[in-house]
Length: 93
Image (cartoon, rainbow, N blue to C red; front, side, top):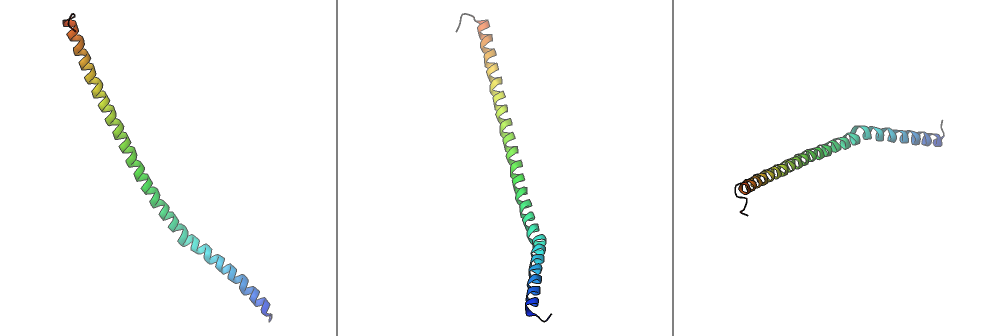
């Protein structure tokens, strides 16, 4: 036991084990929660932007359909009026 090489080897092995334990503790208690918190914040931002984009797309699509319906309705009214004029005056064009 008085062999200095034994003690150097023992402390070297214990030091490596201590560094590995510290690394695991630090990784589990500090690094991973920080990464998870950052990721959750980014996912929340992406989710919010996605929701806003979907709402905008749906609103634009609905507005577009509304405008198309109004245009078709106006066209039908004009066609009806044209047919009624032709019915009343078949010789006038």
